[in-house]
Image 1 (tube, rainbow, N blue to C red):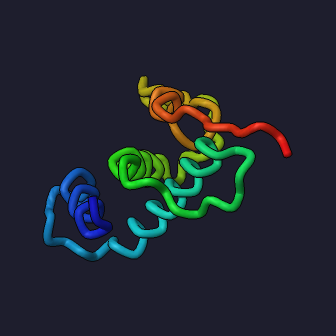
Image 2 (cartoon, rainbow, N blue to C red):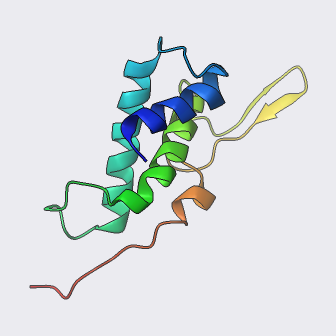
Length: 109
């Protein structure tokens, strides 16, 4: 999946308009954040790997969408207003999304 395809998916899911490029800079920023979350999870002991394998681009896009949707809500433990209640889980992204990544480790040198 190319970056343009990732942006199109984000535009469609968030803005519901594949041609609306008004938030592309923010979307690119969230894609970068998602990339480093994945790299830190997949390769916790190898900081030399700086590119995400192609097979994780779909995960990266879904993570970026989740990061975008949680903007402004960071740190919420519980929030309630007019009978509506929000509870924010630990970390930046959901545990179910994070559990899709399996860390890879080598023998210590």
